[in-house]
Length: 67
Image 1: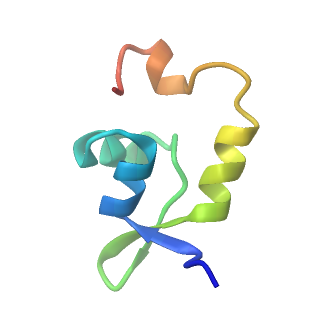
Image 2 (image 1 turned 30 degrees about the vertical axis):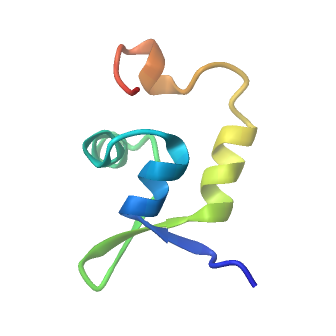
């Protein structure tokens, strides 16, 4: 069974962004995350659903951020 939660390194790698950009997205509310035992965790399902419903470039691209 696949791991349902990703850590920051795995999430950043799967989205092809830096961890700094990942944390900016979390702080800005653009990416759902949960802190568990002091570390950020990201639901694989929530991230896939977020990008599956995005019909245009993610919000941060239109603001000049991101990769």
